[in-house]
Amino acid sequence: MTLDTNAQPEGGVNKLYFAAWRWHFYAGLFVIPFLAILAFTGMMMLWISWVDGRDGERTVVIPQDTITTVSAQAEAAVAAVPGGEFKQYVAPRTEHLAALFRVDREGEAIMVAVDPYTATVIETFPRRSGWYDFFDNIHSDLMLGVTGDRMLETAASLALVLVATGLYMWWPRQAGWRRALVPQFSRGRSLWKSLHGVVGLWVSLFLVFFLISGLAWAGIWGGKFVQAWSQFPAQKWNAVPLSDITHASMNHDRREVPWALEQTPMPASGSAAGTGGLAHVSIDTVDQLAREIGFDGRYQLNPPRDETGVWTMSRDSMSTDSTNPTSDRTTHIDQYTGKVLADVQFKDYSLAGKAMAVGIALHMGTLGLWSVLANTLMCLAVIFLCVSSIVLWWKRRPTKSGRLSAPPMPKEMPLWQGAVLVGLGVSMAFPMAGLALLTVLIADIAIVSKLPKLRHRLT
Image (cartoon, rainbow, N blue to C red; front, side, top):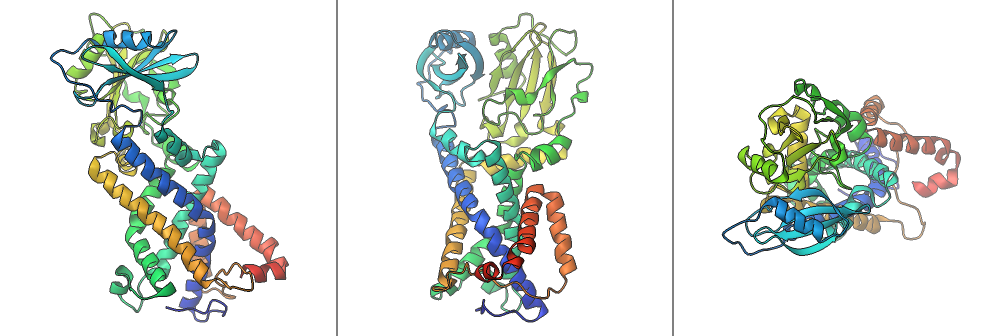
């Protein structure tokens, strides 16, 4: 369909189309750079994690008949970092891989890869210093901290508006579904428009999923609106004393604790509470207990941090411990009695917690090679949509006027009440999108409408 973008649209449906196109255009101006960055960095993280691991944990060793004790491996790891303090043990994923130990020295976290068969240190390297973390820092907050987080949350929220307006414009009305689902290989701008619309329609549902699951980690919509009402209730632990710190304290410069547990208080050692018990509590006996109760393969073991701290065993797909989010599990052990104070499994999560456990695994592509390939295809599709949108604008831009070439806004909008309600709904559900929409609306009313020359340039 060819449209005269300089003419004022006529007819109710046509006016709605032009209004949707205008919002699609302006939302895209802000969203496209961020979507391209998120897609590219996400794809890099996918493959780095698959090939080398997030912390280089895929260091290969030669399997032997006997395995040394975890305590002997830990001693070797600490000895490799003079003055260091043992902070975490990451069990090997398979028998062909090294064990990892986190050792902190003067505020710096250092990872030590140890051969579990000989307790020999293979290599040491600063934690969170690899290429995965470089791309992860951009993907999470553009390396700008809270400011970057808010910018990305705004972009992701407005991207939902981009998807909605794009679907409205490309939805088949008279041409039929074949034209909407199969690209028309013509020439010039028509070809790019067909490819952009078809790819956008096919990936729209998946893109919404990625946006929503990503927003659940964002500071405002995720942390203040969703997660705050969906954490695991510590009251499920009968008569267990609670610490003043939450599970989020176990995050080490990256999200490692399951989403549903982050805001839940940690249990505290030093009481008669709990079940079972160990005759002697040490890293070896705790590791043995972990294996007995079902922590097979890779899992993480955190020692107590202070007098009331606990031994914590955890496995979750978000940390690439497993490829099955329904096997997520976090278990806390009293450091004095060896009793199990809390044992939280996937089945104990709330509905939102379960959705996030599965959603984040899908979002991060930690479900195996098939999810890495599927997510790569999705990232490439998003990058294509960003590039094709720029090509479409370039091909329809006025060459001499210097105008931005936004679609014209209808003078009289039919069914404007419905549009207002949709806008209010989006604003209430996604505050950063609402703030952005309100800012644009105020600027349009207070500035653009008062400056005829500027309004002419923007339309």
